[in-house]
Image 1: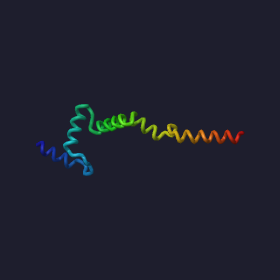
Image 2: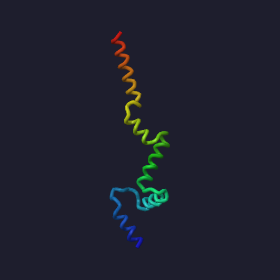
Image 3: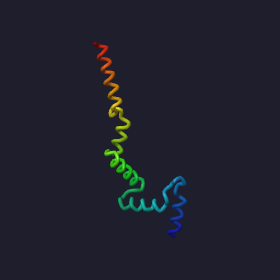
Length: 90
C-alpha cells in the first residue's frame, strides 16, 4: 500500500521540480515536527539565510531596496539641488 502512495506522490509532483522526492519527504517530516508546512519552513529558512548573510531581515532588505529615502544617491541629488537653489538666490 505504501508503494502505491509513494508512486502517486511522484505522479502528483510537478514536472519542473528539481528536488528529489526523498528530499521533499525529509522537509515534510521536519516541517511537521515544527508544526508548519514545507513552504513555510522553506520561507523561514530563506529569511534566516538572508538575515545571516546581510545582517538584516528579508523584509528590511526589501523595504530598503524599494524605498529611495535610504539611497545615498537620492540624498546627494537633493543636496546638490539645494546648493544650486542657494547659489541662484545669492
